[in-house]
Length: 462
Image 1 (cartoon, helix red, strand yellow):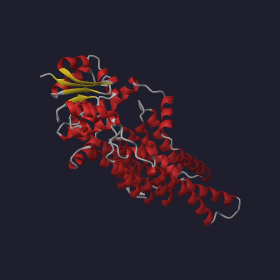
Image 2 (cartoon, rainbow, N blue to C red):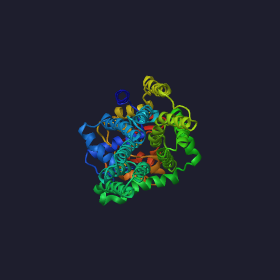
Image 3 (tube, one colour):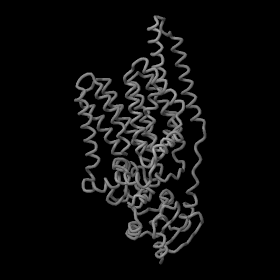
């Protein structure tokens, strides 16, 4: 399963997606690579662990989009193994394998496996932390392993705040231990706290900037870009159509109710917590939904075993013979057919085509702007692709920064001058929403290309 998953992910690793967030993170890594400081100079809308850990790997690999995506891809495979260990700890290797299969072929998870974004690494690290807790619970381990589990979950939170959802299964495994449950919970909690402190320690002098960028921005965006609960639920339904795993999860819940299996309640709580975290996002984007994948996969993977157990309990209550090897084999065959069908469909389907929406911007920059000249643009992927740096504070000109007031015309103008930017490229329309900034550009730069559709290239006046 890992071999097939690796093949699919390698096939998509160099695909051009022109994802806006990828451009932001790519330019952030380039700024850090050239000695700029995170939060002090390089803006980041996420906690520090993602970029801080990815930067040395990115530098060793020589930079470029593949260097940024490769660690994410490897992590996506590690998470599959971690899900197996969680399923094995609660219900045996069969559940672990089926959960692993469902997650490996989940369309959203697969799509984000080659994407330079913080969401999937957050899930990877969090699932690994829960897997450590599951093994500590299964082996009745001492406090050290629980502290490690908590530490890993803490680093997940410091990758992206969505990681707080993994506190739910972590706490369940700790509190369901036979002895010293509260001691194990304290050890796990201490690990979480220590990881948070270690992740923030290098930025002790910039904690106000960390809060303003990684937390305050999102709080402001909830007000400036409001979404109703109904709109968010529609996005979940429209963007995460996990129909077969969802039906299997319902089978799991029904069978667990009949058999009174306690650990399924943990998976349900995990899923509901993930959904709640998504619903408080402001605004909610499709990539946020990836935190739903692990609990859905585990619930779906548990369906065959729990169904057999429910049948066996029912037959015992009716004093009829328990299902024999043929019944077990039949259920296993049906399950295998469903999972294999999902896998075959995923593997046989063509790769998504490259998004050509940024191609005109890339062509315009390559044609009119000398290489390595610093540019200011609202399309960071195009600038990175053509080898042009952007001012560190302007790696992200998201609507959230603009609508919340965190990014102002005065700020952009000052950063443009401070970086000595030689060109301004309007592309997506974000920068043109800054009142007065287009007029300031017209007074300091001259227009060399107007391709229509909002795409303009301005070069600095001699």
